[in-house]
Length: 536
Image (cartoon, rainbow, N blue to C red):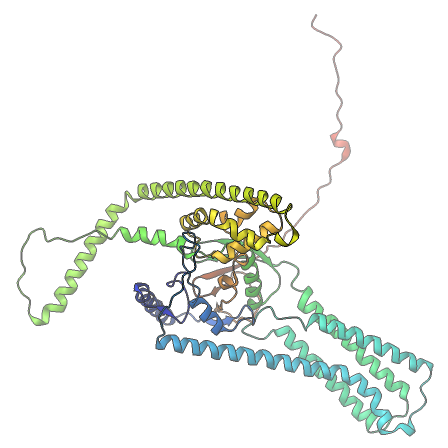
């Protein structure tokens, strides 16, 4: 990946490092100008997965730059590279580490509270049954057949409740949300108050009076387990079933290239809707390619290049005084900028022809590179078939595995593939190791050359590429409304990462009124009368 578009704490000693530092300064100035805006915006952070630490993200992206000339040669070149790190990068890495530590502490604290509450819930019915035998066993009445049957009921209900709680609540987290889940918190508070109420009633009416009716105590424990099962049913309705019915249509637009998708969502909060949108984004949106956007920027920059301002009259103005130096310089720069803008506007009138021929030439080059690549891959796969036929005649110990076969035929297609990826500006998305792994996978599963080329001819979804392209990425949710509030008609919020933003606009699905119209089957009947007279 190019160093300029990489969000890392390292910078190479080259001309690009200075340009990337200038780009960072412009971004910081833009951030400061946005902070002075009068609108109230709330910015929170979403971590897509806790699998990788943020420092690993920073270091991985800094070390991701690779040689784009892997198709020119197959030899390995070793060497050393010098890297420098600035004070601002150190501060940013330290802040990311503090944020990751805070998120881990909050996640562990939440999990600890959930485990403590779960243990309290499951041990409470058992404590209701055991405490009378420990405190006043001589006063208890004998437990009959009905009471012993309630023991079996409590055991199976607790087992069902344990499995249901494990299936609903103890699932691996999909993301680290910036705020708590309101419904889950309310359910936890409800369960805690419910258990404390049962303990209060148990302590006042049973422990203090040392009730002798043990069957009534068992029935009291059974009622607690039944109530907990009903609360779990309420949790299923609030957490799972409530959001299934589509209520809103969201439009997601990527800010850089305008890629747009539409999805239907149910009754969700803004942060959970953002999580659902990111899951759809990784599966449906093509990978973000900053290299495709550089052509339009360079074309716009060429309109202002090559323009010079001359003094037509040739008069040499008198030397200004010291107090008039700044004013004269500012006036001269202003007049020159106006002249350059006017010249660029006149040149823009014919820029559409330049754009047309550039696109036509690019399409011609892509078709040419594609044809060469298809021919090279087909020849390589034909060679593989001949190798497989020859290996069937060899001894079992001399058979070549798929990895060795992929490495053997890869040099024959490497140059054509590299030129095609460079022409389509995809060379940073595919490394030599990933291509060889994909080739070995296709050989192992007896796939066709077209199946192998599909991953390179058409840009696929983000999940198709390596984890460095999509996994270690931090998202920031920017919303004027609270992220725990529900979606509303006309709501707009942003999902921002280091390279681009996803602009999300929400529209409510309208209420559809349908009416029925009855058509009498007899109204479709008609009579065809033929005249017997003919024109003879």
